[in-house]
Every structure is written in C-alpha cells, then in structure tokens.
Amino acid sequence: MEQQKSETKTKKKFNLAALFAPTDMTEGSPGKRIVAFAIPMLIGNIAQQLYNTVDSIVVGRYVGDNALAAVGSASPILNLLLVLFVGISVGASIMVSQYFGAKQREELSGSIGCSITLTAISSVIIMVVAPFVVRPLLRLLNTPDSIMDWCASYLIILFVGIAGMAYYNILSGILRGLGDSVSALVYLLVATVLNIALDILFVASFRMGVAGVALATAIAQAVSAIMCMFKLANMKEIFDLKLHYLKPGKKHTTDMIRLGLPSGFTQAIFSMAMIVVQSLTNSFGEMFIAANVIIMRVDGFAMMPNFSFGTAMTTYAGQNVGARKYDRVEKGAKEGTVIAAAVSAVITGLILIFGKYLMGIFTETGELVKLSMHLMRILAVGYIAMAVTQCLSGVMRGAGDTMTPMWISLITTVAIRVPLAYGIAWMTRTPELPNGRNECVFISLLCSWVLGALITLIFYKKGAWKKRALEN
View 1 (cartoon, rainbow, N blue to C red):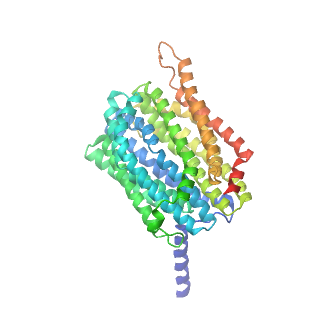
View 2 (cartoon, rainbow, N blue to C red):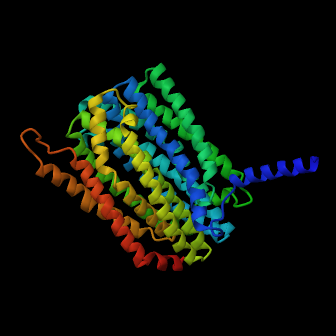
View 3 (cartoon, rainbow, N blue to C red):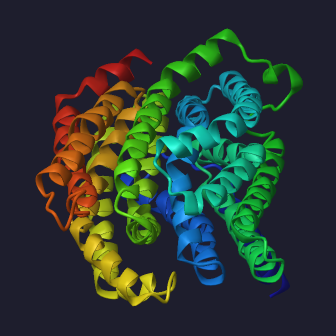
C-alpha cells in the first residue's frame, strides 16, 4: 500500500515536471500536439491582453474618456518603436525551434546567447532615442492637444523601462521555440496580477493618472522577464547559457537578422500604416478615438486564438523541418488551421452576443458603448479569415520562409487598407460629415483581412516555403 502511494506521488511529480518541460512536436498526433501547445499560449494571450485592458478600464473609470483616448493614441507609436524586438523575437524563435528539433545543442546555445545580447543592445537604443521622437510623432498623428501630454508621459515611461517588456517577449519566445509554452504562461499570469494591483494602487490610490498605468506595466513586465531568465538559466539539460555564448557570433547574428528582419520590417510598415490611419481616426474626434480604443481591446481577445495558433504553427513547423519531417508539417498545417478557424468562430460569436456588456466595463457613456458595438460588428467575419492567415503564415515562418508573409502583409496593409480607408472617407464626405463616415477605418481593415487570407492560402499552396525548408 505504501509502495503504491509512493509510486503515485512519483508519477504526479513526473507529470508536473513534464508540464514545464520542453515539448518535442516531431512525434504524436499533429492536431493534439498543436492544441496542447496553443492552449497555454491562448491563456497567456488572455493575460497579455489584460495588461492593456485593465490599463484602459482603470484609466477610463478613474480619469475619464479623454485619458482612455490618450492610451489608445499612443499604441501605434509604441508598436513602431518595438520593431527591433519583433525581429529578434521571430528570428530567435525560428532558430531555437529548428535547432531543438535537429538536436543541435551547440547551435541552440549560440542562438539563445546571441538573442539575449541583441536584445540588450536594442533596449539601449530605444531608451536613448524614444524620448526625443515621441512628441514629434504625436504631432504627426494630429493628436488632439487635450490628450497630448498624457500620451507623451505614457510613452516615455514605457520606453525608459523598455528592457523588461523586450526581454519578456524575447525570452518567452525562446521558451516557446523549445516547446515550453506553460512556463511563459505562469510567469505572465504572475505579472498580470501584479500589473492589476499596481494599476489600482498608482491610479486609484496615488492619483498618478496615465503615467501610473505606464509605470505599473513597466514594473510588471520586468518581473516576468526576470522569471523567464531564471527558467532558461536552469535548463542546462537542453542548452548551455555560458558567457562565451553571449558574444554574438557572425553566423547566428546573420541568421537571426535574415529570419527576423522581414517580420520586423513588416511590423515597421504595419505600424507606419497604423500611424497614417490613426491620423484619420483622430480627425473624427475624441469620441471616435475612445471607441477605437475599446474596440481594439475587445479585438485583442477576438484575435487571441489566431495569434496563439499562429505561434504554435511556427514552433511546430520549425521543429519538424529541423527533424526533416516535411509530410508531418503539411498534415499539421491543415489540422491546426481548421481548429483555429473553429475556435475563432466561437469566440467571435460570443463577442457579438455579449460585446456590449464587455464594452460597458470601459465607460459609463452609453453613446460610446453603442458606437463601439456598431463598429465591432463590421469586423466580425474578418477574425475567421485571420485564423487562416496566422496559421499558414506561421507554417511558412517556421519553415524559414519569412519573406512571403512579409510581402503579403505589405500588400494588404499598404496597398489595400490605407488607400481604401482614405478613399471611403473621401467618397462619403457631406456637409454634415466633412471628414467622411468613420466606418471607413473598420471597413478597410475587414477588406485587408479577408484578402490577406486568400492571398496567404494561394502562396501556401504554391509551396515556395517547402523549397526554403529543404535549404535549411
């Protein structure tokens, strides 16, 4: 009897350890592996979204609708100046997953060390440059004077404390590349709870306003980054985190730039397009800006399954390409995309049914809730289309083809969304609506999502990513 208890206890310990261990996605059912890997990331994305959502709720409730608009107007600039980290994160994740799948310990250690050093260099660049460009960029956006100071203080605090945000995103990407999506989730949940507590303390108790929200986010992100670093430092059975690996080698640096630059460049172009569209959004006034913020917060929840499955597909494809199991990549791509689209459809349906209650959390202004819900309905179908785009783009990136998703993003964002938004606004101008109908911002976004899914499907079927995989 005692022996049986002992065995049961040992089994539980083993299962718990296995939960936080790297996952080999080159074996077992593709669909089950992808779902098991995506679920912790989905929960983590919910927690990540809570960062922004709680910021908006606390600011909207305790400071006002204009402060809510300020936080939203700052987002495009924040995204623009984070492009360096996007490139490092994507490049590191692909390299780590491929080296892990190929069981190449030396190369794996070098790629992880290289990404840590490049993140430090990028953080210093952002910390120095950002405070000087924040206000000029806000003026370029036609940011209303009523929210200018709030926007500037919010951004400057976040950029001065950028290292925590950068390292969490890079290191959690490395953990996911190793197949460990659970550890990153746990650290993010801890940081989310801390962020919520600090939001309430700084804004509700200390009356620090928008600056308090930024400070709370910076501190919470730094805590999650420290936990990720501690986890990686103790994964000695998988790779070595020694001093000489921190020196960026030519091969690893070149490969990381080659793989990550297209994604970073895509994010830069996307952010620039968002800045151009934000200028149009700002022309519709504070009420529409605040509605846009609310929708983007709810949009974050609707997009979560898409981003989660997209990242899962990158890791899955990377590991299987590293292991030279190409047929398995295609099977997983099909199963993963179908599952992602189904999950996205369910979540979108729930948001359409209960969205007005969710939006009511941000503000007590009934007119603002009604406007937000009207605009949200325009985007609904697009979330299912984005499931296809994210999953198939994830497969292509995991196989080492980061250029094709980049070009597709550029076409849909620059050539379709921006001209369409301004075109619809221009065509719908009236004496009562001198800037046109505000729905143009969301109709253009829906069109770019749907066309993006069709183009991505076509290029996935053409199979250039397979040739790229064979070259690795």
